[in-house]
Length: 86
Image 1 (cartoon, rainbow, N blue to C red):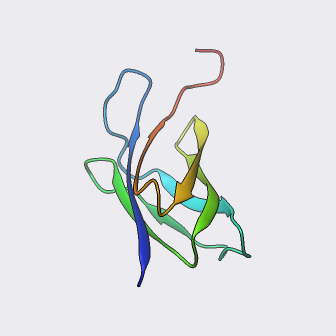
Image 2: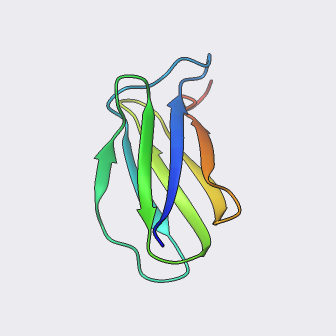
């Protein structure tokens, strides 16, 4: 069974962020050092190696954010990018 999370990256006002870099930053086992880009609608999908707690890191052109989730309990995550100082 493959564990997968689906997510969407949104800007500070709730609009999708296409081309944001998404990667697993931490997990219950070593995670690959690989990033993917969000689609035109800000969505992404990541396969997870095993159940447990993960940290998803997202980097946009001028903002970044993290989201923490527990798989397989949470299979959908929303990450909102807020510019520093906003």
